[in-house]
Amino acid sequence: MPRSPRIEYAGAIYHVMNRGNHLEPIFRDQADRALFLKTLADTCEASGWVVHSFVLMKNHYHLLIETIRATLVVGMQYLDSTYTRRFNVRHKTFGHLFQGRYKALVVDGDSPGYFITVSDYIHMNPVRAGVISDPGVLLKDPWSSAGWLAGSRKARPAWLKWQRVYGELSLAGSVLKCL
Image 1: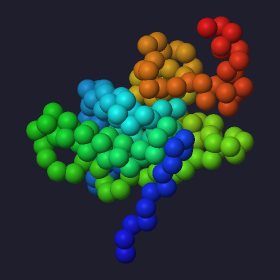
Image 2 (image 1 turned 90 degrees about the horizontal axis):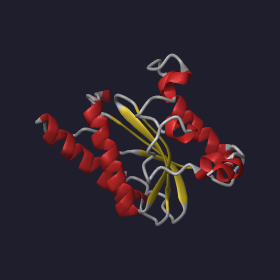
Image 3 (image 1 turned 120 degrees about the vertical axis):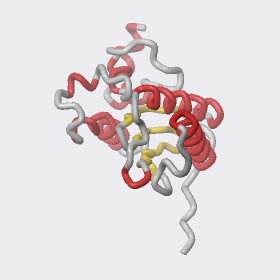
């Protein structure tokens, strides 16, 4: 039975995630995570994506993205295949890194509270998994957007946009006055 086609349209918001093949790590060290964020930046530039939230776990990742153009499929092909190639070259390995097809759930941006609930779910993933025991430490984690969005981390990547998350929290107006 063939796979159903992806739902893609300009302005769509997705909760995207992918796991390592056989649940194996997709990030062996900090350099791998930095390499993934570089690949994500390249993907955003090429595909016109906006990232609202992200977290990188040891064997999977979560992204909350918005596609300015209908580029989910082409962007995800680039992100996962390019990161896999870069990972394999770096570690002198070969073969699949990810377990099959990525998961992309459409987020209804007009449904009150849904967007921010997905963002919170993404940010709290390390806490729920027991990787981080104190939620305050999450704000210092360089592999989560929580710290950048909270303002506790400097030099936010250009592809990570805070406006929608702050708007959902009714903080955008007060923040803009401070800028």
